[in-house]
Length: 226
Ligand SMILES: [Ca+2]
Ligand SMILES: [Ca+2]
Ligand SMILES: [Ca+2]
Image 1 (cartoon, helix red, strand yellow):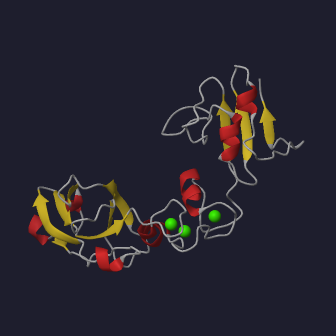
Image 2 (image 1 turned 180 degrees about the vertical axis):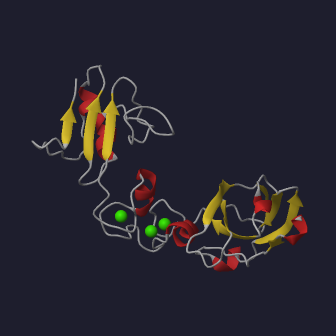
Image 3 (image 1 turned 135 degrees about the vertical axis):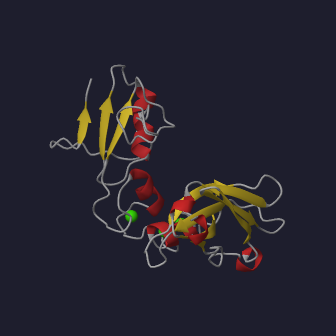
């Protein structure tokens, strides 16, 4: 029954400022491997940017799914990627984006903005709420709807690490509290709530506000806990 599945190869969409250099990106092969599909993507010599692969099962759908992110050539200017379980779909469409092109420097490649999030690749803050599109995606807020971007950010001198994103008070699922208040403040935007947790004493370097000012409000927008 697998033969009844139709896999259509969409003309490769490559979002890049350097169109002439990147228009030769192509799929060199699509192979069936059982219920999986393997894509072979090639691009020209000298093209060193990262590739994102996108897929959808319905071209009338508004959104594509980012199915492989920041795929990097292994030195032969080719990428081989297995789309596990793709055989379950009656049709599957693919396209490629250049993960190294971010025209508005908001942290989201142009192709991801156009295909996945529907944000404006030429505007760093599509909904004009003061939070860049990439930060909104990372924080889990809606980049298309302003005014709802405020979130809690956490600092914890016991389990915190400034490499964490500060989006959770505990460590897990890729999130965790920042160690220093300074880093937490730097990650914040207007309207965010900073929550300080942990049993250890916050020493002076941790208390630096990183050049930002913090307004302590009586309504609990900033919570200090021992
Ligand atoms: Ca962008
Ligand atoms: Ca943008
Ligand atoms: Ca925004």
